[in-house]
Image (cartoon, rainbow, N blue to C red; front, side):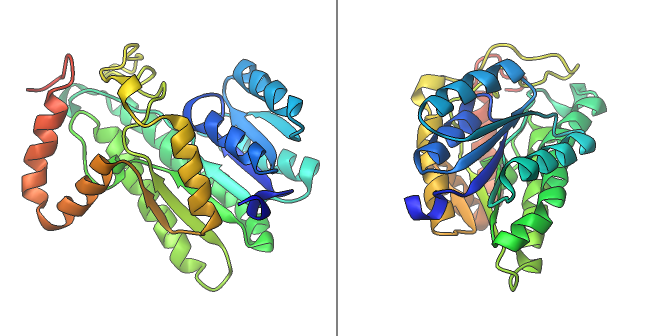
Length: 272
C-alpha cells in the first residue's frame, strides 16, 4: 500500500489514543506525513516523539473539533507546514450511556457538536484542498450509525447524521475525484466508553464491556488504510457488526428485540 500514502499528508483528529493513535502509527508506517489533532496536548506530543523517532514528519495541532475556529486553524496550519492535504480522517468522537428520559438535552448537543459538527467543520475547511489532490475524506463512524442503540440515543443520532452528510458529499463529488469513506468499526477496544457521558453530562468512568475481547485499534487502523488504498465507500468491521447491518435490512423489528436484549446484558445496564 506504500505507494498510496508515501509522501502524502494525512490529518487525523482524535489522534491522542485508541483508533486515532493507531491510525497515526499505520499512516506513518506507510510513509505519510502526519498532522495529529486532539484536545490532549500531552498525548499528542508523546505520540509525535515516538513517530519522529521513526523518521516521520509530524505536526501537532491541539484542537477541539466542536469549535469551528479550531478546525479552520487545524487546516491552515497543516497547509502552512506541508502545503497539501491528501487525507482527512474525522476520528474524534464521544459517546454516552443513559436512557433518553433521564438525559439532559445538553448531552445530546455535546455529542452532535463533536461527532457530527466536528466532521462538518473539518471537512468544510479541508475540502478545497482535498479536491486539488483528489484526496480522501474519512468518517470513523459506528454500527450505531446503521442501527439505533438503546441508551445511546445521542451517539446513534450523531452517527446517523455523519452518515447522511458523508454520503451526500460523496454523491455531490462523483465527478470531481474526491473519495469519501464511511468506516464503521463495531465494538473496538478504546477509551471511548470510559469517557462516555452519563445523563447529567459527567463521565461514565468505567467501561461496561470487556475491552480485551474486542477488536483492537491496530486491527481497525489496518483495515481503514486498506479501504483507503482501494478507495472503498464503506467499511463495516467485526462479524457481529456485519451481521447486524445485514439482518437489519431485512428484519428490522426482529433486530430491535435482539439489540435490546444484547445491550441489556451489559453490567449496570440502565434498562432490562
